[in-house]
Image (cartoon, rainbow, N blue to C red; front, side):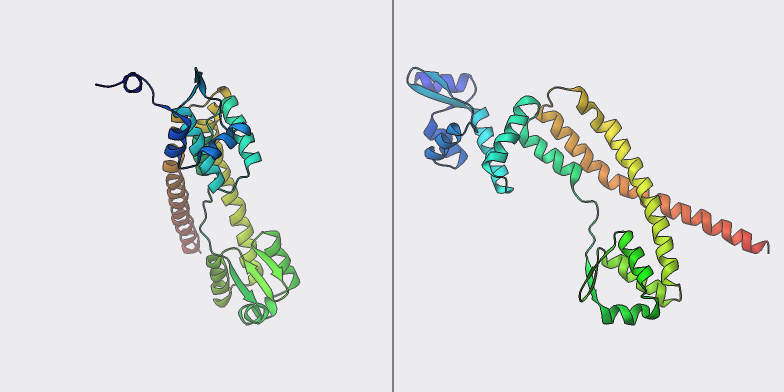
Length: 251
């Protein structure tokens, strides 16, 4: 026959003594008490001489463990938890923040020494062209050469110059393309900010479920945005090539 404690556990939310909470969280009782002293863990509910912890305490301990694993210091964790208590659940917002700020590009940097650059660009390796590349944010100059943020862009630039296109012309086209790409990116960021993230400013508390829903939605939209941008570019190329072909045919 079940005792009173077992009946209570079955009838309502799970409750833990400190030893049980520590075991469930995979830490020591001493660590639980340390977190309480540092006000990282909310106080338990007292019933007589017994301190009872609940699922919210276990969730908090798992949040702390996740933040520690991500490299946060305990002081910073206390601030994050304080922010979570004032309006947002930290555990879910971590995932939402990651979805929002995760890099879109998967470019690999490449380093070229001065002899490789000289072989690729010859007399076109001028101070003006180097300064333009730096201004566009693509290269950093080092004593033994340069590092380009994208191997693919570097290889494309080298190939175009090899086909006889002047490096200055490649860089001019690159600057124009970058400006248009920035405008496309701004339109997508505005769309997501206004239609998805805008409502966040209107709520005092974002529930874990809502944060998770937004996170998943953003993760689904990211590849859609890339597909739209890629399709728009290829369709634009079709239009421009046809227009240029018709123009040349009239001469």
